[in-house]
Image (cartoon, rainbow, N blue to C red; front, side, top):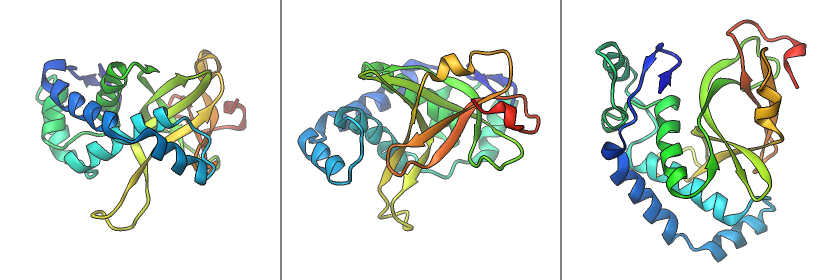
Length: 214
């Protein structure tokens, strides 16, 4: 797999991460679906409880097991030394969006989700002049499309110890068709929790113009 920010390769070693994936699967299976559904409905969150539970299990297991503050210098050193294995970067708690999304995609495959890994750009605010290189996961579930961004969850508390993470799940329409053009393109997406807009797509690191939004 290509690591876009370092222009090098990442080895996806299933044997090295399969135990963690299975542990996340176990967490997912233990979540009480009726209780999850009741909570989602009480806050008027328009998302299926199975999809939410699957994504919630990943981001909270990862945050508790690995943490949310990667060792950036360790990561750089591993890439400079050659082709690192995904398991090694995860084990050193050095993963960023590329590696976190790669692990999430392996888990989603095991969970039977219709998802894929996508490396492109993200624009957090429409007024920003430049997009940020980013890796995320477009997925489809029961006829709806979403962007799952496992490296950018919503924290529900200012305390790291007590925080619950909500997965960043953005509603989108026809994402791949709209970015499947030979030009820079940002697609509007909306959070299932608060309708917060984020623009995902493809770019070339040049400044953003109004024509880039579709």
